[in-house]
Length: 270
Image 1 (cartoon, rainbow, N blue to C red):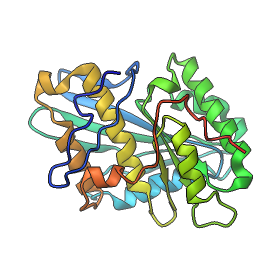
Image 2 (tube, rainbow, N blue to C red):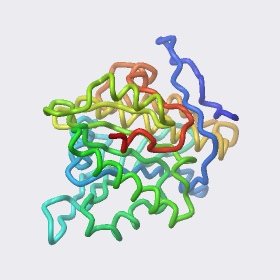
Image 3 (cartoon, rainbow, N blue to C red):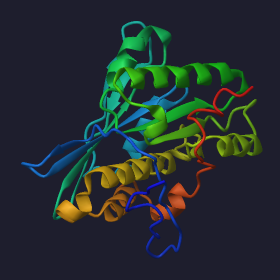
């Protein structure tokens, strides 16, 4: 299987490996050559009340105020859940500017059309699952909904950068760490654990999906060869602006599993 130019590259000063290879992806990334700007769209998906909005709020709090945009929210009429959040995050080096647009989708069944619209043009997905055993069915249903909505836009979840975050690790009746490790070993997606209300695991998850998405974009568009753009430096700078002193290898290395089985295989396991 071909790998990106980023895959397997050692983290400077850390000695670790942080690349994750993808088989292929139909990229929707926006590149404006006239102003030398690339826009990457990342979407947090998952069942209702799994912690998608909390993740974005934690990211926004962690981000350097000089590098973040305003956190925009739109309340739905029928539910207290936020409609979407937008976190513009701009990085510029001597070759390209990169804007990171991060969205959530409403998890309630009645907002199916909104979810379908928001995932259009997504370059990477964070699927936020609820760690509680009682939410197994809701997680499985939501992942199936994600697959179907991507298919509408001509995208295959098996060929996209996707990470799974098991949130709410601080609550009772959650799957054990050993069980999550076993589930992660069965699927292709890296799995992260989190307590989004405290920020635990949030930056790690975000850097995980951004690293996979960057690798996919680099392989597909060759921005290093065309513009001299270094995604490695970019990722390290994003981590720094999110308040991290750890290197990218250490951050994404907290993941569990990530093989090549069909997407979401472990999500709905009873």
